[in-house]
Image 1 (cartoon, helix red, strand yellow):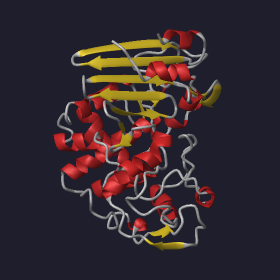
Image 2: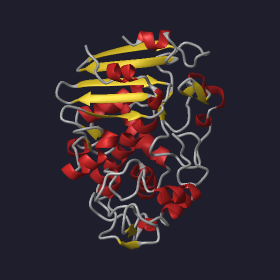
Image 3: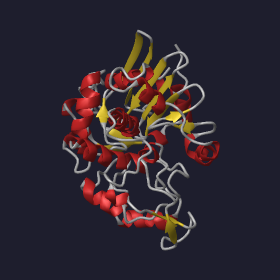
Image 4: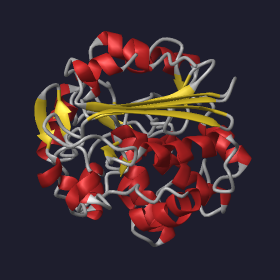
Length: 354
């Protein structure tokens, strides 16, 4: 079904995985680049926003260990976010603010309800650009800022909404990466490796390519974005992007997806895994987020949640869906930016059949 998208050049290659119970089917089609060698099952892809649920799971490891509390303020660990102020009018000028009704909590970060995110306030967007807070690209290019400097600059912004009031995409994951590193006393990638990747056998996942020869090339449409031979993922980043910076393989991410489906697999408690994949939004918040998430779709921790499935997408060309109803996991990895996919590829990718 998907071969024709490779044959016609829509994508240089793709890897499709379907699993249910003990059965897993994998198709590897095409090449690592339009002019590259053939894809292999262990080829490395930029999984972009698949990073978000992984970082959310790492946060829940700390919650399970009582090193974090979901509803406790983050002020003691992230003093840059202490005493926030909020725009009186979400669309208004940045100097017209009121004190926040309450502190920002860990749950606010996990559910993207801290009050900041991808904004439609033009003045706020301009200020973020001036402060280089959006230099994570999509996620190319990387930000040149170290985590501490990035947090200091973020802390100068007013919140667009009161903490807990509105779902706004992405910024919560950036902040969670800093929170995890500070609470654990380890660089983010070290903590992810010790507590998520190694226990699950995800030996190829990280912020830097473990084997440059297996790295694919990334495209926006047919235009080159990040060539494998000169990729930014060949060197460690100044600020590991907890929102979209990981690269991985189809089998590595499948191991993560199975962990959530099977109740934590010893990495998370069953309660934490269930919490992650349960819709946390109110009906009003879901309605406000429908233009981004889609109709009747909510948000857990790093994943979208609907009546019969949860999962998410990576902007650089990846899709993942898990159905807890029948235990089906579907993963599709490509090298073409998601927003340049033809509609028919979306339709076939989100509705896999056995």
